[in-house]
Amino acid sequence: MEKIAIFVDVQNIYYTTRSHYHRKFNYTKFWNQVTKNKSITVAIAYATYKGDNKQNKFQNILKDIGFEVKLKPFITRNDGSAKGDWDVGITIDILKYAKSVDKVILASGDGDFELVLKEIKMEFDTKSEVFGVKGLTAASLIQQCTKFTEIDETLLL
Image 1 (cartoon, helix red, strand yellow):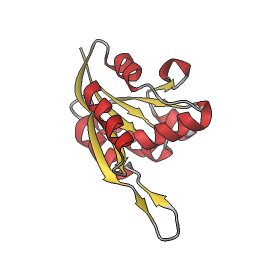
Image 2 (tube, helix red, strand yellow):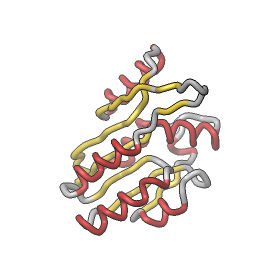
Image 3 (tube, one colour):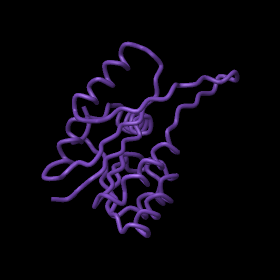
């Protein structure tokens, strides 16, 4: 049975599906698709924390599905801009688990992850599958992964 590790960049998936489809990502359908006949080593969803009730309910849904949810505070800077990305944390976790799985599954369109996918292929011969919105997923990320799966209507609410 193929061993997998799942990593979801919640902010990236939220904004890309909202921008392209004006709909939300269906985490249950995603989970069912990627875990079928697989052995799950780890499944982590990375999100920001604003402390509101709606967000807490969403995070509990992710936990009920099977994800470990890692949170960091959503920071609003003095100039009005915001920060809340998990790029470094996701990268560290991918490197931590890649040597013990057959495949890393990454839900994100962020091209910054191209380097870590290249590294796990070279160092551990670990395959990678990226789920992202076509047109909003970095071409370099698509080229670097073993398999690209487009987030389409079948993975939306």
